[in-house]
Length: 136
Image (cartoon, rainbow, N blue to C red; front, top):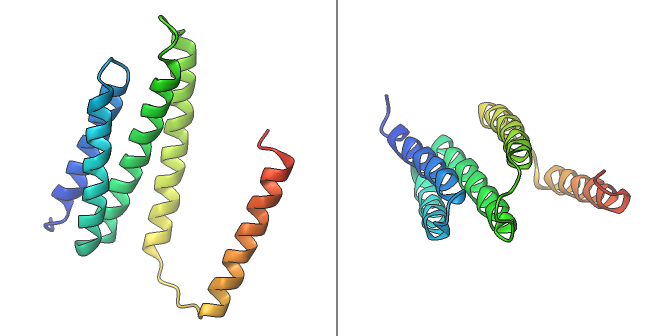
């Protein structure tokens, strides 16, 4: 194994800790985990894009669970069905993001600046149309 994988594993561990902390009354633990994940993603880009990818994905999962937990705070006893539905959706999105990120990091494509700008404009247009129609 190369030396970068412990950093990616550390990022994943802090992501899991953030998820575990988010469903208690320890919101500070999630914030701390998120800050560590941001720092790890910055450090990981120096060594390996895979480690950076793992820490960014873990950070986004931690951020989502923290936000969800804060939205559930006013409820004394939120129904388990709501929590599990959110975790199932989050898991599906994380798996899809992981698969797409793996595909993106596996291929090398050389494009000129004009093509990149055209593709970015196309994504921006598609995203604005999606927002205009609604996400439902």
